[in-house]
Length: 481
Image (cartoon, rainbow, N blue to C red; front, side):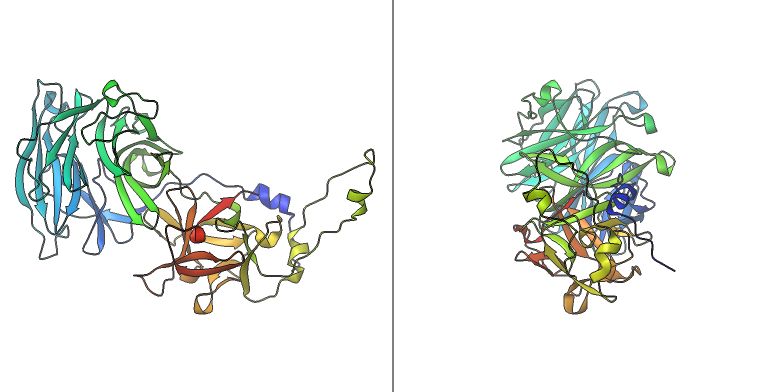
């Protein structure tokens, strides 16, 4: 059968980037998730009423984990060999009041099958009596500069900050709660470059697709404030810079939790109040975290579409290493034409015209100046049924209009094979970095402890090497043609 080759213009129309779809596989149903924590080879998060989720890879989640005490909105932090767990009992307007207690317990493992599993009660570290302007619920930990802090509270009155003892998890002797914000709940804390960031959830909850939850942030040089937003509005006056709001078919993000994966990759967990693709239920979500002008903001998984893959190191475009095919052109049109001579558009070079120089087997990949040629255009989409890792799917990366797939070649080389099969060597993890660029890693890794990523060796040679997170060598951007 004769191959029908569409023009590049047609390919652009057929494969423009599409909005990222709902994330995470399995049964990621949870409300008020704790910060995702690693224990005994798996990832864990806990929610309201004692339930939890567990995952091998941060993509497929299932019910799992045990947390006694019930209550609402737990948080988890690991300090030395202990996992501290804080949770609230009472309050939140439930049963008609705001009298509540924040309790803390600890265990040396989160895995019920581990010999180190077993919770030890620390006791009540914060409380409210139902009459004062605060509600001791929604606790969150921060361990920074050798000190342990706990924020808590809701819309009823103030968000408060309290210092705990990192050796015991109990209230630090002499520590008194400090009022730091209003008009938020489900707070979280970050520390970066000398700044303390207080993130809190604004809007309404608990009403499915009618929930307007969104996460906002202020910062301070002190963990006890004063916290202000990017416009200088104090959080004690209701300020807060937007970090993330609802997207596509997921409504009401709340309960921020930092997930620092190293090498410039930071992500955050949350729950969506309502995922319309899962019956409107509350589900776990994970997104990249970016930093812009000193402020955290939600990034995105790469949307499916057709792109130039550009190296941040030298600006070269990832391409098939094939002979350059010239476009027919009479140079006299440019150098000798008169101003009034008629002009007309020149059509893009077609895929069929470009591929006359391609060999039939595997083709090596290099970097070159981008010229909008078919051998430089890649259609990227999540690979159906291939899974993912830490909130991002595994992608297939194909030359646009073909089945020719980017793959790991012999001895760790990079090549494009004739057809996509779904093999691990043809699956790619694309994680957005904190500066907005991306890291590209193959699923197939010879050494899991020292994973390789796609890097630019000089200006012309791509290779797979351990990533230096501080260098542009492994940073890529995806440019729309």
